Image 1 (cartoon, helix red, strand yellow):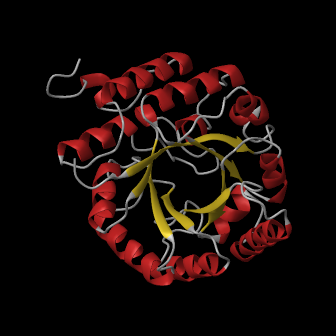
Image 2: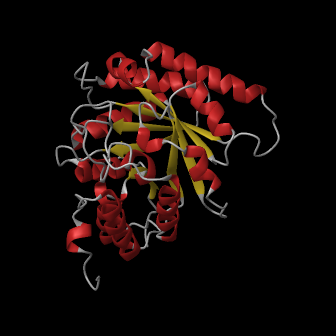
Length: 306
């Protein structure tokens, strides 16, 4: 196989957080394990948010407690603020992903924080890490995800300059991986290229990750543009489930199995078992009580796929 593209599986977090069905922690832990058996090496397993606002993510500590540590697997916990980060530190998460927004409008709706306040929040988390026990493994790895990079449901268009400036501020804090997210699925391949170039210029030493939603049927095209622009890390959600409860009209993520199929047909390597992914997509669809939007969960792979 050719160039390796790492696909970070976000189904147990971003996939489930916008679904009406609330799954018990034991079922969500089972979901994580099925995805890891299908090849997921990095997986967004939980979100440390208040259950009042996102009941689908209640019991994050229980999910993590039910998961045995596995060599070569990294479980990620999403946080919105310092309180969430402190909760994450009390579990066995391997990574913490701090959610931020490229706009004031979404930041205030999602976290009650403006962009400047979010940067300060991240700065406080980074400072707290520096003051913690410096022994290996004392604190989980840290990344940041910027929501609404390609457009905001409240503030409208987001400029390349906005994105570049904010990525530079995050990188200056020492964050080594920065994800750019199309939260409401309004991006196009050409704007993906422009914003990836701006982010790389702003943070040349950081790993860039891309997170696309397929709201307007451009998700895979945008993933293609990101890979062509040199990005090696993409988020996806098995079955194409998910969305953001704080962004009106934000429907599902790009489906992991659809992305794996496209990349591996082109000669890239992902490390996933496509048949196992399709089976897991159908399983989680049964758990949430509705068919998945992904193409591969309906049609299967090709050739010689069941």
